[in-house]
Amino acid sequence: MNANRPASLQYKTAECDKVPNKIKVIYGIGGVSENLMANAVHQLANPIFNIMLGINPAFIGAVLAAGRLIDAFVDPIVGNFSDNFRSRFGRRRPLMMLGAVVAGLAFWLMFMFPRGLGGTACLVWFSAFSLIYFPAFALYSIPKGALGIELTRDYHERTRLQGVAALLVPVGGIAAVWLFAITKLDIFPDSIAGARWTGFAFFVLVSLIALYVVHSIKETGAVTVARQRKIAFRESLALTVKCRPLLLLGGATCFILLAFFTVYSLGLYVNIYHVHGGNEKTAAILHGAISTAYQIASIAGAPLISLLALRFGKKNTLIGSLFLVLAGTLSKWACFTPSAPWLMFVPMILMGAGMSGFWVLLSAMVADVCDYDELKNGYRREAMIGAVLSWVSKMGGSVAYFISGLVLVVTGFNKDLGGAQAPETILWMRILFSFFPVMFICLAIGCVLRFPITAETAYATRKAIAEREAARQDGDDRVQKNPE
Image 1 (cartoon, helix red, strand yellow):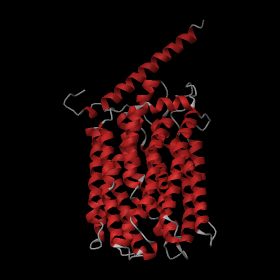
Image 2: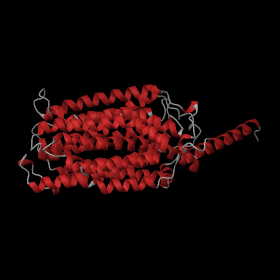
Image 3: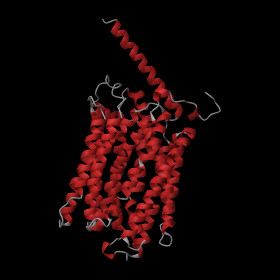
Image 4: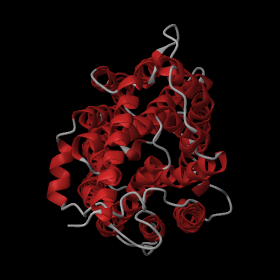
Protein backbone atom coordinates (compact mmCIF):
# COMPACT_ATOMS: atom_id res chain seq x y z
CA MET A 1 0.00 0.00 0.00
CA ASN A 2 1.13 3.59 -0.69
CA ALA A 3 1.55 5.42 2.60
CA ASN A 4 1.11 8.78 0.88
CA ARG A 5 -2.41 7.96 -0.32
CA PRO A 6 -5.47 8.53 1.88
CA ALA A 7 -6.21 5.45 3.97
CA SER A 8 -9.57 4.90 2.30
CA LEU A 9 -7.91 4.73 -1.14
CA GLN A 10 -5.32 2.12 -0.20
CA TYR A 11 -7.72 -0.78 -0.74
CA LYS A 12 -9.02 -2.09 -4.06
CA THR A 13 -12.22 -3.98 -4.70
CA ALA A 14 -11.75 -7.62 -5.76
CA GLU A 15 -13.52 -8.70 -8.93
CA CYS A 16 -15.67 -11.18 -7.02
CA ASP A 17 -17.01 -8.34 -4.87
CA LYS A 18 -18.04 -6.07 -7.74
CA VAL A 19 -21.77 -5.70 -8.42
CA PRO A 20 -22.76 -5.44 -12.11
CA ASN A 21 -24.05 -1.99 -13.02
CA LYS A 22 -27.34 -3.48 -14.20
CA ILE A 23 -27.97 -5.00 -10.78
CA LYS A 24 -27.08 -1.70 -9.09
CA VAL A 25 -29.66 0.07 -11.24
CA ILE A 26 -32.36 -2.54 -10.56
CA TYR A 27 -31.69 -2.34 -6.84
CA GLY A 28 -32.06 1.43 -7.14
CA ILE A 29 -35.42 0.96 -8.85
CA GLY A 30 -36.50 -1.04 -5.82
CA GLY A 31 -35.49 1.97 -3.75
CA VAL A 32 -37.75 4.18 -5.87
CA SER A 33 -40.73 2.16 -4.70
CA GLU A 34 -39.48 2.17 -1.10
CA ASN A 35 -39.05 5.95 -1.09
CA LEU A 36 -42.50 6.46 -2.60
CA MET A 37 -44.09 4.18 0.01
CA ALA A 38 -42.20 5.88 2.84
CA ASN A 39 -43.46 9.36 1.92
CA ALA A 40 -46.83 8.94 0.20
CA VAL A 41 -49.07 8.79 3.28
CA HIS A 42 -47.37 11.77 4.91
CA GLN A 43 -47.77 13.80 1.71
CA LEU A 44 -51.52 13.25 1.42
CA ALA A 45 -52.70 12.82 5.02
CA ASN A 46 -52.94 16.48 6.06
CA PRO A 47 -54.04 17.89 2.66
CA ILE A 48 -56.92 15.40 2.34
CA PHE A 49 -58.00 14.75 5.92
CA ASN A 50 -57.28 18.21 7.40
CA ILE A 51 -57.55 20.77 4.59
CA MET A 52 -60.29 18.97 2.62
CA LEU A 53 -62.25 17.23 5.42
CA GLY A 54 -61.43 19.50 8.36
CA ILE A 55 -60.20 16.78 10.74
CA ASN A 56 -58.05 18.07 13.61
CA PRO A 57 -54.36 17.80 12.56
CA ALA A 58 -53.44 16.60 16.05
CA PHE A 59 -55.61 13.51 15.47
CA ILE A 60 -54.03 12.94 12.06
CA GLY A 61 -50.58 13.23 13.62
CA ALA A 62 -51.57 10.74 16.31
CA VAL A 63 -52.71 8.23 13.67
CA LEU A 64 -49.47 8.60 11.72
CA ALA A 65 -47.48 8.26 14.94
CA ALA A 66 -49.39 5.11 15.92
CA GLY A 67 -48.83 3.60 12.49
CA ARG A 68 -45.12 4.29 12.66
CA LEU A 69 -44.96 3.00 16.23
CA ILE A 70 -46.57 -0.32 15.27
CA ASP A 71 -44.36 -0.44 12.19
CA ALA A 72 -41.31 0.07 14.39
CA PHE A 73 -42.17 -2.89 16.61
CA VAL A 74 -42.94 -5.04 13.58
CA ASP A 75 -39.52 -4.34 12.02
CA PRO A 76 -37.41 -6.60 14.30
CA ILE A 77 -39.98 -9.38 13.96
CA VAL A 78 -39.81 -9.11 10.17
CA GLY A 79 -36.02 -8.89 10.30
CA ASN A 80 -35.58 -12.03 12.39
CA PHE A 81 -38.18 -13.88 10.32
CA SER A 82 -36.41 -12.92 7.09
CA ASP A 83 -32.99 -14.00 8.43
CA ASN A 84 -34.43 -17.39 9.38
CA PHE A 85 -36.70 -17.80 6.36
CA ARG A 86 -35.76 -20.54 3.90
CA SER A 87 -37.39 -21.06 0.51
CA ARG A 88 -36.31 -21.88 -3.02
CA PHE A 89 -36.85 -18.19 -3.84
CA GLY A 90 -34.58 -17.03 -1.02
CA ARG A 91 -34.96 -15.27 2.33
CA ARG A 92 -35.83 -11.81 1.03
CA ARG A 93 -37.68 -11.74 -2.28
CA PRO A 94 -40.98 -13.50 -1.37
CA LEU A 95 -41.47 -11.17 1.59
CA MET A 96 -40.72 -8.10 -0.54
CA MET A 97 -43.39 -9.06 -3.07
CA LEU A 98 -46.04 -9.71 -0.43
CA GLY A 99 -45.27 -6.47 1.41
CA ALA A 100 -45.48 -4.30 -1.71
CA VAL A 101 -48.85 -5.71 -2.81
CA VAL A 102 -50.48 -5.39 0.63
CA ALA A 103 -49.08 -1.89 1.24
CA GLY A 104 -50.22 -0.70 -2.19
CA LEU A 105 -53.72 -2.06 -1.66
CA ALA A 106 -53.99 -0.51 1.82
CA PHE A 107 -52.91 2.90 0.49
CA TRP A 108 -55.56 2.80 -2.22
CA LEU A 109 -58.32 1.80 0.20
CA MET A 110 -57.22 4.51 2.63
CA PHE A 111 -58.92 7.10 0.41
CA MET A 112 -61.96 5.02 -0.57
CA PHE A 113 -64.08 6.14 2.40
CA PRO A 114 -67.77 6.60 1.49
CA ARG A 115 -68.89 10.09 0.52
CA GLY A 116 -70.73 11.87 3.31
CA LEU A 117 -68.96 9.92 6.06
CA GLY A 118 -68.52 12.09 9.17
CA GLY A 119 -65.15 13.39 10.32
CA THR A 120 -64.79 10.89 13.17
CA ALA A 121 -65.72 7.96 10.93
CA CYS A 122 -63.24 9.15 8.26
CA LEU A 123 -60.53 9.30 10.91
CA VAL A 124 -61.34 5.72 11.99
CA TRP A 125 -61.25 4.62 8.33
CA PHE A 126 -57.88 6.32 7.82
CA SER A 127 -56.57 4.75 11.03
CA ALA A 128 -57.61 1.23 10.08
CA PHE A 129 -55.86 1.19 6.74
CA SER A 130 -52.82 3.05 8.11
CA LEU A 131 -52.34 0.24 10.62
CA ILE A 132 -52.28 -2.23 7.73
CA TYR A 133 -50.14 -0.06 5.49
CA PHE A 134 -47.15 0.55 7.75
CA PRO A 135 -46.44 -3.09 8.78
CA ALA A 136 -46.84 -4.15 5.13
CA PHE A 137 -44.30 -1.50 4.18
CA ALA A 138 -41.91 -3.06 6.71
CA LEU A 139 -42.40 -6.43 5.03
CA TYR A 140 -41.02 -4.85 1.85
CA SER A 141 -38.38 -2.46 3.18
CA ILE A 142 -36.57 -4.66 5.73
CA PRO A 143 -35.85 -7.60 3.37
CA LYS A 144 -35.05 -5.13 0.59
CA GLY A 145 -32.39 -3.46 2.74
CA ALA A 146 -30.91 -6.84 3.67
CA LEU A 147 -30.84 -7.84 0.01
CA GLY A 148 -28.70 -4.78 -0.75
CA ILE A 149 -26.27 -5.59 2.05
CA GLU A 150 -25.81 -9.12 0.70
CA LEU A 151 -24.93 -7.99 -2.83
CA THR A 152 -21.29 -7.22 -1.91
CA ARG A 153 -18.92 -7.62 1.03
CA ASP A 154 -16.54 -4.83 -0.04
CA TYR A 155 -16.26 -1.53 1.87
CA HIS A 156 -15.96 0.65 -1.25
CA GLU A 157 -18.34 -1.32 -3.47
CA ARG A 158 -21.06 -0.81 -0.88
CA THR A 159 -20.66 2.94 -1.29
CA ARG A 160 -20.75 2.62 -5.10
CA LEU A 161 -23.89 0.45 -4.91
CA GLN A 162 -25.70 2.94 -2.72
CA GLY A 163 -24.40 5.82 -4.84
CA VAL A 164 -25.96 4.36 -7.99
CA ALA A 165 -29.16 3.59 -6.10
CA ALA A 166 -29.23 7.19 -4.88
CA LEU A 167 -29.43 8.39 -8.48
CA LEU A 168 -32.80 6.63 -8.77
CA VAL A 169 -34.29 6.55 -5.27
CA PRO A 170 -35.24 10.26 -5.26
CA VAL A 171 -37.60 9.59 -8.17
CA GLY A 172 -39.90 8.01 -5.59
CA GLY A 173 -39.67 11.14 -3.47
CA ILE A 174 -40.40 13.31 -6.50
CA ALA A 175 -43.52 11.28 -7.23
CA ALA A 176 -44.61 11.52 -3.59
CA VAL A 177 -44.34 15.30 -3.30
CA TRP A 178 -46.51 15.77 -6.39
CA LEU A 179 -49.34 13.60 -5.07
CA PHE A 180 -51.29 16.52 -3.62
CA ALA A 181 -50.87 18.57 -6.78
CA ILE A 182 -52.08 15.59 -8.85
CA THR A 183 -55.28 15.40 -6.79
CA LYS A 184 -55.93 19.04 -7.77
CA LEU A 185 -55.90 18.34 -11.53
CA ASP A 186 -58.96 19.54 -13.43
CA ILE A 187 -59.68 16.01 -14.69
CA PHE A 188 -60.96 15.16 -11.21
CA PRO A 189 -64.21 16.61 -9.82
CA ASP A 190 -62.47 17.25 -6.48
CA SER A 191 -59.35 16.29 -4.52
CA ILE A 192 -61.03 13.31 -2.88
CA ALA A 193 -61.71 11.72 -6.27
CA GLY A 194 -58.16 12.64 -7.26
CA ALA A 195 -56.78 10.92 -4.16
CA ARG A 196 -58.73 7.76 -4.98
CA TRP A 197 -57.37 7.50 -8.53
CA THR A 198 -53.90 8.39 -7.29
CA GLY A 199 -54.15 5.61 -4.70
CA PHE A 200 -55.05 3.07 -7.36
CA ALA A 201 -52.11 4.14 -9.53
CA PHE A 202 -49.86 3.83 -6.46
CA PHE A 203 -51.05 0.25 -5.87
CA VAL A 204 -50.32 -0.80 -9.46
CA LEU A 205 -46.94 0.94 -9.59
CA VAL A 206 -45.41 -0.43 -6.38
CA SER A 207 -46.63 -3.94 -7.18
CA LEU A 208 -45.06 -3.91 -10.65
CA ILE A 209 -41.77 -2.50 -9.38
CA ALA A 210 -41.55 -5.18 -6.67
CA LEU A 211 -42.25 -7.90 -9.22
CA TYR A 212 -39.49 -6.61 -11.50
CA VAL A 213 -36.92 -6.34 -8.70
CA VAL A 214 -37.53 -9.75 -7.12
CA HIS A 215 -37.46 -11.39 -10.56
CA SER A 216 -34.21 -9.69 -11.61
CA ILE A 217 -32.00 -9.86 -8.50
CA LYS A 218 -30.85 -13.23 -7.22
CA GLU A 219 -29.96 -13.63 -3.57
CA THR A 220 -26.24 -14.18 -3.06
CA GLY A 221 -26.46 -14.77 0.68
CA ALA A 222 -28.81 -17.75 0.69
CA VAL A 223 -26.06 -20.33 0.10
CA THR A 224 -23.76 -18.73 2.68
CA VAL A 225 -26.31 -19.01 5.47
CA ALA A 226 -27.63 -22.45 4.52
CA ARG A 227 -25.40 -24.00 7.19
CA GLN A 228 -26.19 -21.31 9.75
CA ARG A 229 -28.58 -22.36 12.49
CA LYS A 230 -31.77 -20.40 12.92
CA ILE A 231 -31.53 -17.78 15.64
CA ALA A 232 -34.28 -17.23 18.19
CA PHE A 233 -35.79 -13.76 18.17
CA ARG A 234 -34.76 -12.87 21.71
CA GLU A 235 -31.19 -14.06 21.17
CA SER A 236 -30.84 -12.14 17.92
CA LEU A 237 -32.35 -9.00 19.40
CA ALA A 238 -30.09 -9.18 22.46
CA LEU A 239 -27.00 -9.42 20.27
CA THR A 240 -28.12 -6.55 18.08
CA VAL A 241 -28.93 -4.01 20.77
CA LYS A 242 -25.42 -4.43 22.16
CA CYS A 243 -23.86 -3.36 18.85
CA ARG A 244 -22.48 0.12 19.57
CA PRO A 245 -21.81 1.20 15.95
CA LEU A 246 -25.40 0.32 15.04
CA LEU A 247 -26.81 2.29 17.97
CA LEU A 248 -24.81 5.35 16.92
CA LEU A 249 -26.19 5.15 13.39
CA GLY A 250 -29.66 4.63 14.83
CA GLY A 251 -29.27 7.70 17.02
CA ALA A 252 -28.17 9.82 14.05
CA THR A 253 -31.11 8.60 11.98
CA CYS A 254 -33.58 9.19 14.80
CA PHE A 255 -32.39 12.76 15.29
CA ILE A 256 -32.53 13.52 11.56
CA LEU A 257 -36.11 12.26 11.39
CA LEU A 258 -37.03 14.40 14.37
CA ALA A 259 -35.40 17.37 12.68
CA PHE A 260 -37.38 16.91 9.48
CA PHE A 261 -40.77 15.42 10.26
CA THR A 262 -41.73 17.40 13.36
CA VAL A 263 -41.97 20.51 11.18
CA TYR A 264 -42.14 19.08 7.66
CA SER A 265 -45.88 19.68 7.25
CA LEU A 266 -45.33 23.29 8.33
CA GLY A 267 -43.47 23.84 5.06
CA LEU A 268 -46.68 23.41 3.07
CA TYR A 269 -48.64 25.63 5.48
CA VAL A 270 -45.99 28.38 5.44
CA ASN A 271 -46.01 28.12 1.65
CA ILE A 272 -49.82 28.35 1.40
CA TYR A 273 -50.64 30.88 4.10
CA HIS A 274 -47.49 33.04 4.30
CA VAL A 275 -45.83 32.97 0.90
CA HIS A 276 -49.06 32.69 -1.17
CA GLY A 277 -51.65 34.26 1.12
CA GLY A 278 -53.96 31.22 1.14
CA ASN A 279 -53.87 30.32 -2.57
CA GLU A 280 -53.82 26.52 -2.27
CA LYS A 281 -53.52 25.67 -5.96
CA THR A 282 -50.57 27.96 -6.69
CA ALA A 283 -48.87 26.90 -3.46
CA ALA A 284 -49.40 23.21 -4.28
CA ILE A 285 -47.69 23.65 -7.65
CA LEU A 286 -44.72 25.47 -6.13
CA HIS A 287 -44.60 22.96 -3.29
CA GLY A 288 -44.24 20.22 -5.87
CA ALA A 289 -41.60 22.24 -7.74
CA ILE A 290 -39.37 22.98 -4.74
CA SER A 291 -39.74 19.43 -3.46
CA THR A 292 -38.74 18.20 -6.91
CA ALA A 293 -35.69 20.48 -6.72
CA TYR A 294 -34.85 18.81 -3.40
CA GLN A 295 -34.96 15.40 -5.04
CA ILE A 296 -32.97 16.56 -8.10
CA ALA A 297 -30.31 17.95 -5.77
CA SER A 298 -30.24 14.54 -4.09
CA ILE A 299 -29.70 12.86 -7.44
CA ALA A 300 -27.04 15.33 -8.53
CA GLY A 301 -25.21 15.03 -5.23
CA ALA A 302 -25.00 11.22 -5.18
CA PRO A 303 -22.00 10.77 -7.55
CA LEU A 304 -20.06 13.49 -5.75
CA ILE A 305 -20.86 11.93 -2.38
CA SER A 306 -19.50 8.58 -3.58
CA LEU A 307 -16.27 10.19 -4.80
CA LEU A 308 -15.79 12.17 -1.60
CA ALA A 309 -16.42 9.06 0.50
CA LEU A 310 -13.76 7.16 -1.44
CA ARG A 311 -11.34 10.02 -0.88
CA PHE A 312 -12.08 11.11 2.70
CA GLY A 313 -13.95 8.12 4.13
CA LYS A 314 -17.63 7.61 4.81
CA LYS A 315 -17.62 9.13 8.28
CA ASN A 316 -16.00 12.46 7.35
CA THR A 317 -18.15 12.81 4.24
CA LEU A 318 -21.28 12.15 6.25
CA ILE A 319 -20.39 14.85 8.77
CA GLY A 320 -19.87 17.33 5.93
CA SER A 321 -23.25 16.37 4.47
CA LEU A 322 -25.00 17.07 7.75
CA PHE A 323 -23.43 20.53 7.98
CA LEU A 324 -24.87 21.24 4.53
CA VAL A 325 -28.31 20.17 5.83
CA LEU A 326 -27.85 22.53 8.77
CA ALA A 327 -27.09 25.43 6.44
CA GLY A 328 -30.19 24.69 4.38
CA THR A 329 -32.40 24.54 7.47
CA LEU A 330 -31.22 27.91 8.75
CA SER A 331 -31.74 29.53 5.33
CA LYS A 332 -35.49 28.75 5.38
CA TRP A 333 -36.18 31.81 7.53
CA ALA A 334 -35.04 34.22 4.81
CA CYS A 335 -36.02 32.18 1.76
CA PHE A 336 -39.68 31.38 2.50
CA THR A 337 -40.90 34.89 1.74
CA PRO A 338 -43.86 36.31 -0.23
CA SER A 339 -41.62 38.94 -1.84
CA ALA A 340 -39.59 36.30 -3.70
CA PRO A 341 -41.22 32.83 -3.68
CA TRP A 342 -38.49 31.44 -5.95
CA LEU A 343 -36.01 31.73 -3.05
CA MET A 344 -37.67 28.65 -1.53
CA PHE A 345 -35.59 26.60 -3.95
CA VAL A 346 -32.37 27.55 -2.09
CA PRO A 347 -32.88 25.71 1.23
CA MET A 348 -34.45 22.75 -0.55
CA ILE A 349 -31.44 22.34 -2.84
CA LEU A 350 -28.98 22.61 0.05
CA MET A 351 -30.88 20.10 2.16
CA GLY A 352 -31.41 17.77 -0.79
CA ALA A 353 -27.69 17.58 -1.50
CA GLY A 354 -26.87 17.11 2.18
CA MET A 355 -29.50 14.45 2.78
CA SER A 356 -28.31 12.58 -0.29
CA GLY A 357 -25.00 12.14 1.53
CA PHE A 358 -26.77 11.03 4.67
CA TRP A 359 -28.87 8.29 3.08
CA VAL A 360 -26.17 7.02 0.71
CA LEU A 361 -23.57 6.71 3.43
CA LEU A 362 -25.94 5.46 6.12
CA SER A 363 -26.87 2.44 3.99
CA ALA A 364 -23.22 1.71 3.17
CA MET A 365 -22.21 2.04 6.83
CA VAL A 366 -24.95 -0.33 7.99
CA ALA A 367 -23.45 -2.96 5.69
CA ASP A 368 -20.08 -2.43 7.40
CA VAL A 369 -21.81 -2.89 10.76
CA CYS A 370 -23.06 -6.30 9.58
CA ASP A 371 -19.44 -7.43 9.10
CA TYR A 372 -18.51 -6.02 12.51
CA ASP A 373 -21.38 -8.00 14.02
CA GLU A 374 -20.50 -11.21 12.16
CA LEU A 375 -16.91 -11.11 13.41
CA LYS A 376 -18.09 -10.55 16.97
CA ASN A 377 -21.06 -12.95 17.09
CA GLY A 378 -20.56 -15.41 14.23
CA TYR A 379 -23.84 -14.88 12.34
CA ARG A 380 -25.00 -13.12 9.17
CA ARG A 381 -28.04 -11.15 10.36
CA GLU A 382 -28.48 -8.39 7.79
CA ALA A 383 -32.26 -8.12 8.13
CA MET A 384 -32.29 -8.04 11.93
CA ILE A 385 -29.56 -5.40 12.06
CA GLY A 386 -31.37 -3.31 9.48
CA ALA A 387 -34.65 -3.85 11.33
CA VAL A 388 -33.29 -2.65 14.67
CA LEU A 389 -31.87 0.44 12.98
CA SER A 390 -35.27 0.93 11.40
CA TRP A 391 -36.95 0.43 14.79
CA VAL A 392 -34.82 3.12 16.41
CA SER A 393 -35.42 5.54 13.55
CA LYS A 394 -39.16 4.85 13.40
CA MET A 395 -39.55 5.41 17.10
CA GLY A 396 -38.11 8.84 16.43
CA GLY A 397 -40.38 9.14 13.42
CA SER A 398 -43.44 8.25 15.52
CA VAL A 399 -42.60 10.95 18.02
CA ALA A 400 -42.00 13.37 15.15
CA TYR A 401 -45.34 12.61 13.48
CA PHE A 402 -47.17 13.04 16.76
CA ILE A 403 -45.43 16.33 17.51
CA SER A 404 -46.10 17.56 13.97
CA GLY A 405 -49.85 17.51 14.59
CA LEU A 406 -49.47 19.28 17.93
CA VAL A 407 -47.12 21.87 16.44
CA LEU A 408 -49.78 23.04 13.99
CA VAL A 409 -52.32 23.33 16.81
CA VAL A 410 -49.86 25.26 18.99
CA THR A 411 -49.30 27.84 16.25
CA GLY A 412 -53.02 28.71 16.41
CA PHE A 413 -53.77 27.73 12.81
CA ASN A 414 -57.46 28.03 11.91
CA LYS A 415 -58.57 26.43 8.65
CA ASP A 416 -61.68 28.63 8.45
CA LEU A 417 -59.55 31.80 8.25
CA GLY A 418 -57.94 30.71 4.98
CA GLY A 419 -55.29 33.23 3.95
CA ALA A 420 -56.23 35.59 6.78
CA GLN A 421 -54.31 33.71 9.49
CA ALA A 422 -53.28 35.74 12.55
CA PRO A 423 -49.80 37.34 12.23
CA GLU A 424 -48.58 35.52 15.35
CA THR A 425 -49.68 32.20 13.81
CA ILE A 426 -47.59 32.86 10.71
CA LEU A 427 -44.65 33.99 12.86
CA TRP A 428 -44.68 30.82 14.97
CA MET A 429 -44.97 28.67 11.86
CA ARG A 430 -41.87 30.32 10.42
CA ILE A 431 -39.87 30.12 13.66
CA LEU A 432 -40.58 26.45 14.22
CA PHE A 433 -40.07 25.53 10.57
CA SER A 434 -36.69 27.26 10.37
CA PHE A 435 -35.05 26.78 13.77
CA PHE A 436 -36.61 23.81 15.59
CA PRO A 437 -34.60 21.22 13.55
CA VAL A 438 -31.21 22.76 14.39
CA MET A 439 -30.81 21.04 17.76
CA PHE A 440 -31.54 17.59 16.33
CA ILE A 441 -29.16 18.01 13.38
CA CYS A 442 -26.37 18.89 15.82
CA LEU A 443 -27.13 15.78 17.89
CA ALA A 444 -26.96 13.66 14.71
CA ILE A 445 -23.53 15.10 13.94
CA GLY A 446 -22.41 14.15 17.46
CA CYS A 447 -23.46 10.52 16.90
CA VAL A 448 -21.54 10.27 13.63
CA LEU A 449 -18.40 11.73 15.22
CA ARG A 450 -18.32 8.72 17.58
CA PHE A 451 -18.81 6.06 14.89
CA PRO A 452 -15.77 3.70 15.11
CA ILE A 453 -15.64 1.88 11.72
CA THR A 454 -13.18 3.18 9.12
CA ALA A 455 -11.81 1.76 5.87
CA GLU A 456 -8.89 0.23 7.77
CA THR A 457 -11.02 -1.47 10.42
CA ALA A 458 -13.56 -2.62 7.82
CA TYR A 459 -10.97 -4.38 5.65
CA ALA A 460 -9.31 -5.89 8.75
CA THR A 461 -12.71 -7.23 9.82
CA ARG A 462 -13.35 -8.72 6.39
CA LYS A 463 -9.94 -10.42 6.44
CA ALA A 464 -10.54 -11.87 9.91
CA ILE A 465 -13.94 -13.26 8.85
CA ALA A 466 -12.43 -14.87 5.74
CA GLU A 467 -9.65 -16.49 7.79
CA ARG A 468 -12.13 -17.83 10.33
CA GLU A 469 -14.36 -19.23 7.57
CA ALA A 470 -11.35 -20.89 5.89
CA ALA A 471 -10.30 -22.48 9.18
CA ARG A 472 -13.83 -23.69 9.79
CA GLN A 473 -14.02 -25.18 6.29
CA ASP A 474 -10.68 -26.95 6.80
CA GLY A 475 -12.04 -28.40 10.01
CA ASP A 476 -15.20 -29.62 8.27
CA ASP A 477 -13.12 -31.26 5.55
CA ARG A 478 -10.95 -33.08 8.09
CA VAL A 479 -14.03 -34.36 9.90
CA GLN A 480 -15.48 -35.67 6.64
CA LYS A 481 -12.24 -37.37 5.64
CA ASN A 482 -11.56 -38.85 9.10
CA PRO A 483 -14.92 -39.65 10.71
CA GLU A 484 -14.69 -41.06 14.21
